[in-house]
Image 1 (cartoon, rainbow over the protein chains, first blue to last red):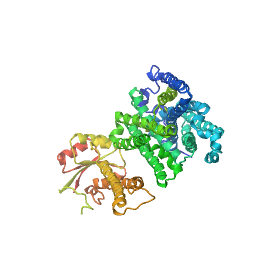
Image 2: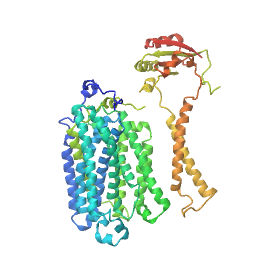
Image 3: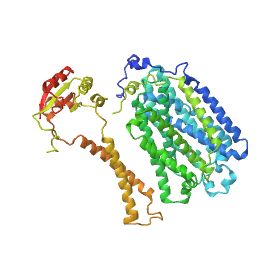
Image 4: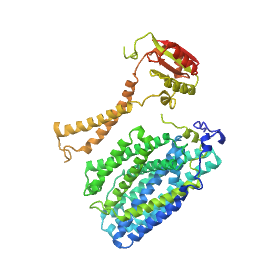
Length: 418
Length: 185
């Protein structure tokens, strides 16, 4: 099949716009961002090491440690998964506009194999404190858990988690490799190969993310179930990745990199997608609430009963306002999305709200009576972000900052919003 | 009839029509016409030319505001109607929930907001463009038919305060127009 969508197909590399020759397309050797992996590792060691030291000091604080650890790990995992989804969708839709920012998402998804390490301690030591279905005596005394045991049992859970990370890492490594390979060879066949792989990749992504969110979040209260839960986790992840992409692109430009390449047109599009997924998150979140509220069945309402009582109620209202109403109207005008400061403000705020969303999903299982922030929340979050930034920074400097010879790069450079 | 003809000031002459060979020539000519201080003029191309609104010095469209007001109006109608029916006009106890059960009203509220926003965008666009208009004086020019094919045009209306038949035609010629003509009303 011939491909008519690539007018630049036969253009030699020399025909690329002059802006590419004049710009720094790699992280310069003396650039401060080169220290990101080292700084990230120090932060990770301090945060996670401190967390482990505090958390394991007494048996009473262990449940807090693993719940906090889970929130931190899921926070960075959701950004990385969002990056993987972004890359898959750009290939599946043959998007032209996004080529200049795609490498940022590729660097974000490159962290996935490293983030698997964050889940290792949870699997090895945290299962008993996180999941009460993992105790044989609890299951034996609980008909519902006995019924669910063929799915919810420790060996199968561990196998599934390994499978999720194997699939995510394989997708991230493969797509990252093809993109890097194209930097060297300029082979257009690689673009077609990635497009062909992206659709089955999206199916795998949807299935694994759905079941991973069932396993790692929904089974924290194993009596409760919601079939839309996977989409809810996905929608939050998409808010996280577009907030992260906007912040990273603005930070790169501030650091004097890709200034001529990433224009306010690209920032405008990232802002539009951030706005769209803020609305999508609210749509899915409300759909979940609405059906449970309407049918009013106790085994379903328990989820919201926990979160609408005590100080969790305030957190729920803050989520509705801060994760939807306020950013929705703030991001609505065109000028906001094209203004670096305003967009960075919205993106930073939404990352915070995404963190609150995950906290709100996990913590009521440990503190049913109300919000109870812990020092361990802070240390494990800082450690998780350190792991993510170390892996992201490592990926950032081992390859060019944009897909140098992607056939749609010229189209992306010239992109303008209608 | 307003439906058939655009509402334009009376006069013998509609204005000047200039044809340009390429989108780039059109773009540059637009910048110069804008800088010359003309206000009642337009550009015509078979496809959207990126950045032409800036080259023409057009202000931001009022359309987003129309759409926003219509969307908020639709939302207020949806929530208000259901709330009024459920609490005042015909209160019914449904599955033991309070009369004003706002979550139950959200789907209709949302749909009416979307309907209002979309209708505001479509009909607001038509109204701002004075569409539908079945006739326009520019249709008197045979060349102008190519505006939907391969022609790039600037039309300057005769009631523009700066319009002067000779000088305006001369300006358009200097800007690289391949053909300039005066169009009757």
